[in-house]
Structure formats: C-alpha cells, structure tokens
Length: 136
Image (cartoon, rainbow, N blue to C red; front, side, top):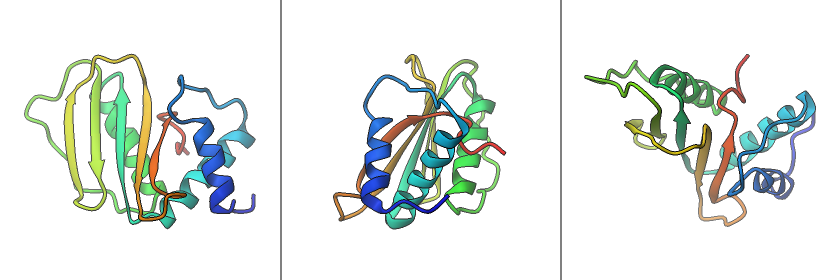
C-alpha cells in the first residue's frame, strides 16, 4: 500500500477522531489507518500516547505495540507498586520517555495519539483507535 500524503493521512485520521469510537471494518481499512497514523507521527516532533483499557496488562500491551510501530525502542518494563485493578488510563510521553498511570472510569476503550508539531496539518489529537491496531 503506498504511503499517503500528509493531507490524505490527516483526513483519514480525522474520521476516527473526536467521535464515537469507530470500529475498523476491514483489513484494508486497518492498513490504511496504520499508514496514515505512521505518516503523521513520522512527520511530528513527538507524540503522547494515551490508552484507555479494561485492565493494566491490556493497556500496557497496547502502549508497547504502538511505541514499536511508531519506531520507538520498548522502554524498560515499568512497575507500578499497585497497578489499578480495573480499567486503566496510561499515558506515555515519547519526548520524555515517561509513563503516567491512573484509574479510568470512562466508557472508551482505545488509543489516543497526540502529535506535537508546529505544522497544523500534523499537530492534533487522533483517535480513539483500536487497542490492537498494531497487533501482529
């Protein structure tokens, strides 16, 4: 699949952003969404990845998969003295390589990616994307 230009990538990502959680309908749509997110992220200066998951392990797996897909080295395992037992929000800042973890009471399950850039075509918060968008 050819890499989308940034305008095309932004248009596709905007269809998944700031709306009710959308499902990915086909493998072709999954591939297009991956390509669009990668194009925008590669053009950005850094990203914040926010994961809303049913539990700690599911959330951490999603963070690691998104980081790997975006070209980051997997950070050292993080340990939480007492990880949340139920739904969790995990934020990872790629510029600082830091995690923030908290309980999450919202309904959404998915991933937000906030791209930092001076270019307004690139800068923005995208998602909610599927937790498993980049699963093998």
